[in-house]
Length: 302
Length: 154
Image 1 (cartoon, each protein chain N blue to C red):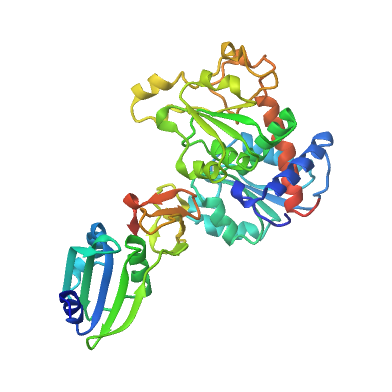
Image 2: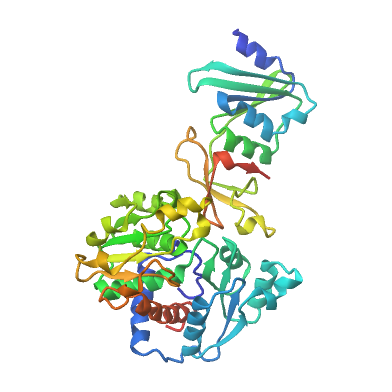
């Protein structure tokens, strides 16, 4: 994996994901391993993000490497009209690895083609967010003991939700049965469904969360955003169909866990937080270990 | 000699695009900018065809297509064949077939795709299994699928 960019979850093989996940376990046991001392990593956030950026920068710091970069484009050369390609080519000269987020889809792929150092995609518009996917896989494996043969519900905005897309694609390697819960207008797009179909995996579609919740090992929640609806009345009609409340958890599997990429708004009632099923905050913590593992492997340190 | 052969051989020099699916004729005319082409052009549509049911044909006097133009025809009318004629003789016949990838011909339909904002060669993987299906192009960059209805040529 040395010097291999991670742009889309399909860039890495199943074996490579598993290698990252097992190394992440080592970092969870001992997070402060300063094996990257002397390395410099660029953190280029062309689009602002708190969670992902801090998680990456925490991972880089815990590895003992230094971070350079910017957290929004107001401070970058973008305001002077420089193209992204030129920014990436220039920054490549200064660092050993680039972590980037951009609002345009395909930006990280293009960056990986012009950069002289590897790129980790920290999110490109509604397209891919592979490290979120890796931490989701890690969280699933940690809570269920395996990634194989699970029943997973994906809930909410399945049409635009990039974490949903990446997770569906990655889990299609593990003989998953998918339970897809969304409003009619926000169903999983065919470009993602094709991965499930290619492997002849079972999938079921629902519009109400209660129809799926008792059948699954993992309930992966995402937000249905008002701005995705052209008509506000359409939003009002469906907004409660993908909201999780404690009352819906009465007869779920005892080992079931609720995941969410965060930030949450109202799609998980806070009364779920105190149940043994809630796992979304531990999930966020796992992000640091997974990113440490990924960076260590790409820099060739493990 | 059949009437059809007479029409084809009636071009002294130029190109015949044969075996176009009948419903794709006007799209082919459009992408090749034949509306503003001053050469002599003949076309026929809803002609009987064993292979296609109904086919269309275009004959253009004194015109040989560039590689880029041929690629465009391939995407819109993958069943077509190109017959190049010189002095009433067929000098070359090419049966088109959909390529696995295409570069620099079609624009990604996604307004948020990086290729619509930075100077970069557009690259797609052709997802169709059969030339008779509507074209579906997977963008190498944004990973979205451009379908036939949204096809825009560069």
